Length: 426
Ligand code: PMP
Image (cartoon, rainbow, N blue to C red; front, side, top):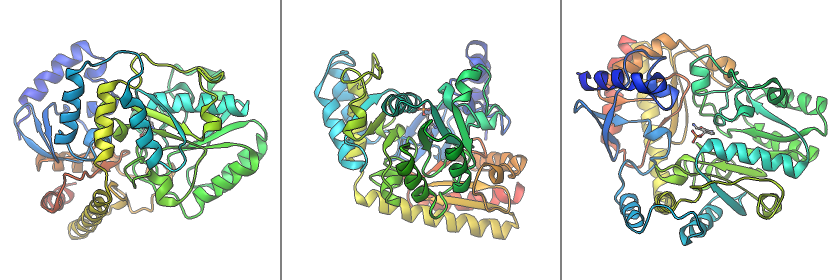
């Protein structure tokens, strides 16, 4: 497979963009080689600038649950763009989209739209601090909540991939207010809560982690956090930027039947355009400006084109979509396991619904420490093997891959065949 045009574009991009990209993991640094530049996405497929086609398992890192360029989403975007792309004053789509979100996500009574997942989590902890009048937050090692200063402590995703889980540029003062615990370790959380009694505003987590690769919550973990937060007056924040509208219509909170105090959303909510949101019961959301003392604003927040794309995407999420994603996810998991067994490759496949990661190790992978035991050199060889076979996976061991509703059995079968070859070479 030739990538001449991609390589040339990467050379040009590096002259004018930091690292040639606008988000670090895109640069392929952890798997080596030049990143692939794309010209088109349709359904489950991507076409690169050299004309190569791929089955896509990145899905823009989650948003494209209906597949690329879904006709309903494209039509909604075009219709709104023709009517104007931004006014900076209220429009109807904002409350229509908000109503849809509230109807779908159990814990949300009121919502505020922002422009990214990062903004959603930053704003949510500010509201949580304003509400509880406490300063500290607790996060989990390997969870990623965007690049807000408070979260770049033991952070996952690109921060982990590039070995900067504690980013330079975050002041000691900010870092002091962020406590961390190992994922799935309820006893550690209880100990920290005791040591910091009356000081923790919020516990924030990915209810299914995706940013150290996929890690499911252990039995009782979410329930235990819920109880602890209720007992201690701590707000429980589910960061559902990745899991929201993906693991069920109502996200992980609906799938596991746990009601957080606050929820952050992103990715799918914008249907491929830049949207994030945070929501909670009214009592908490009424703390936010202009009603309350917690300030938060945005020139392009609730942008009508983005709302149109989001609304069209959320409207496409019927029960059939989730049944299909579960079915395809299971098919793929079974196929990949079989392929690994045939190839004699020791891998651990973690999957929840349509999110999965192939870890290059024996497992089990239940937290950051175990995720880090993976053989990233083998992952890199697997990644390139798959790329050569026309399968586009996230270019890092510590990320989730996503299946869309535009994938079908044909794509799953082709992926398993490709994996059978790639695993042998890895
Ligand atoms: N939270 C989670 C759980 C995420 O997965 C991400 C992005 N991968 C973010 C927050 C940040 O979202 P964004 O990249 O839109 O700022």
